[in-house]
Length: 147
Image (cartoon, rainbow, N blue to C red; front, top):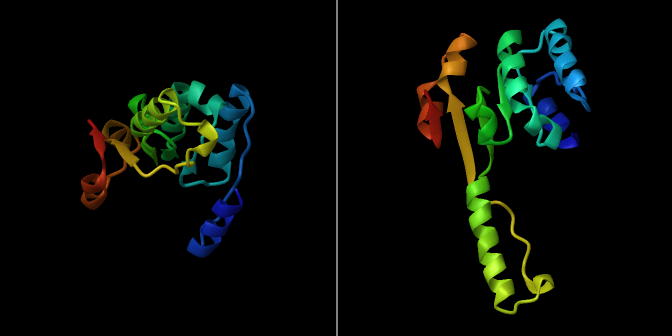
């Protein structure tokens, strides 16, 4: 959160932090964002949000708020866009570690890896529902565009 606040300051963006620990609190966040004249929202990676991703995408469209999500699965169910570490690539990297361990490597001796492959996924159907036009330059950088 501290990094988000610092980035918002540098970009001169007013940041409103809302916490949700239950599906009901998540639902209540959208009227709060609308009352605060929010222009968009960002969802951080969290099991609650992931489990409720379809409802979250529906609430966002109903509130007419564009959202940025941590992984592609949100966009597949109607979220606007996601940018985050590629789960499929990370799972393949994990298989390399499993192979090394099965061949006798000690897990403690293996280096910790940071994600190196990130996916940008955009849902054009959701953009249209929100009345947004995604710039061609951004569409050109997307790893996947959902029609």
